[in-house]
Image 1 (tube, rainbow, N blue to C red):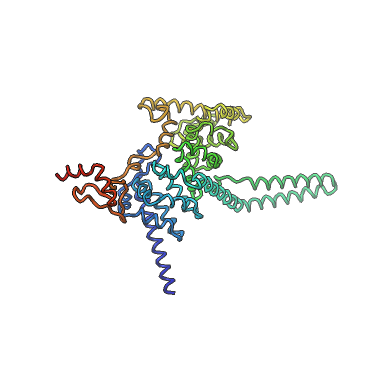
Image 2 (spheres, helix red, strand yellow):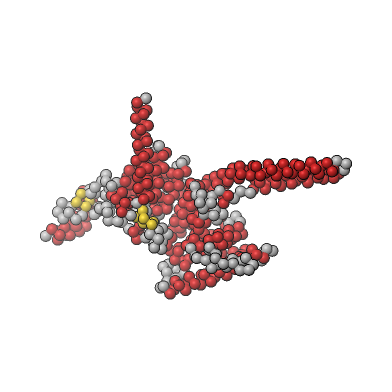
Length: 479
């Protein structure tokens, strides 16, 4: 009994300690809203202090722990602090590739979700891109697999919730229908033909109602903006991983072959800004990388894609005025998420195959829907002209197309979309003067015995640097 109690206490202590590390890693990052990049989250003093204390090695060890609660907390901390370049450099020298492989395909959904966020940050560095591109099985398959798992879970839970909420309502309707049926039957007892026709009509009505009950399930019946769960986080991280992968032109075809466009169609129905804006950003980046992959033939229901994007843009534009007919006038504030949707719709508008689908929607029998979509694309044209004018006046943007907004957004995503403080070493950890590896709490580098300015991880690196020119520099420094 004493041994079991000791093991239990030791296990709980490890869980608590790693949980504190996870919390510190999350709180160690700062939010800089002035950063015009893919992430406004930048390292803070606490994150740098944690890395200097050797937290990365500890978290990497516990990320492979057989105790799931320990592994979840460790992976959560790594996913957050991996925004720091020093963390990614240490993981590179500590064989972090194998850990990413194991955690991405873990049987635990929380560990896999954190692994996708972690890999999205690792892809910011050229060294990691080369290693992760050779991962087997490929990471795009894992992203689609976990996203499909999360989407299916959302549908199942929504069905369960809807059935529970509607149980009393349908019972009331069925009782009322039964009373009405008995009344009608009492009037038809003397007319067998009318009775048979009524029973057949009632049976058909019941069949249609059952089918309607079964199919009346959408994502937004459960996953609302104020009710985010692990399912929505996993969907968002799957989209983030695939968007970040697009720095590699060869990855575009792999993502499409793995079912990435089907995932985009599903995410466009989720009324959560991070998810549907990521899906729109995916479409825009894919078009810039390979326009042929964004043809309507690659989508299961291209009309649904256009309608969903238009619907999300109407919600996202925050309109503040309507005319006498109730038509929305797009005069609201333009957010970053709105710009990604405008970019995706502009891609469709430029394509002749997509243009036919848009024209068919405008010419639909419902004049309100057609006019709404027409006004929407007219607004997109005016917004795009304004953005291009402002960009050219500010000196243009990076990448192909000069000041064109879509080229600038894609260039940011292609380069990792990170701020300088996230994409460069902090200088808090000493690099080896020979191989460049960063020291850690476990491995501290020894300084040159003469100048004390350079540090080396071992004798071999010191001799290599000595022959490469440090001998002259050292002699000049020491006199």
